[in-house]
Image 1: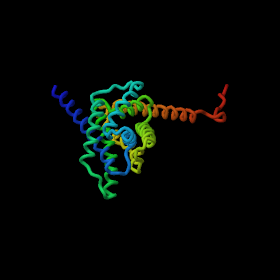
Image 2: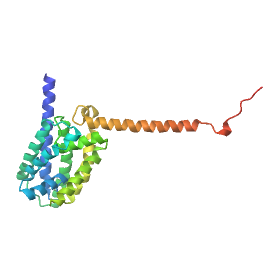
Image 3: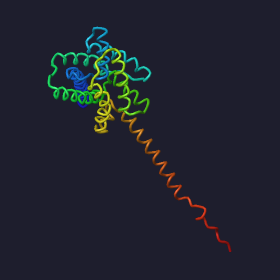
Image 4: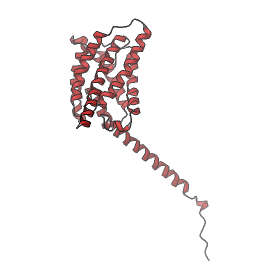
Length: 247
């Protein structure tokens, strides 16, 4: 009983810390003033046309993205609902607590730190195993169903949303490019350095299994090619075949 409560407490803490970190990373990017991440470009575009704050717009989009879970057969959890609510609140609170720096080096450092924090927070709250957020559930669902890498799927989603947000009038800058092409590799990096014994009991377990299956498939194909090559080398040429002597 004590062990179960401890695990539950750790998972709940990982969820809340991850979501709070994600929300503050969004606020950091806004305050850096070097461009928003693709989803927030989209949120900002919606806010420009509806009068909502970025936090409220992110919550509305999160609910809509949940509909895309239906064909992927993803199951929402308490973490899914917490994602919509906590991030919407923390990004608006972070905007109130932080001011935009005037020094360019500080703005660059804030932007880079925001991208790294965003990736780490994603791995943390998805790993809590209490249900991924709408957007990351879409990502992990596509990874499992397609067998593609986290890096490729995440980058593809971010690039698509970026284009839609730009068309709606969202702000695009160098920070947007940094996020779009940096978040996928960073998430994959944090997942890769996480011990396997932790991954298999976390929210990343399906991804870890898909990765292992892919590795086994590649190893099997490599082994088959090696066996064929070895067999071909062992085959004797016609010149090497000597007639059997007869008495």
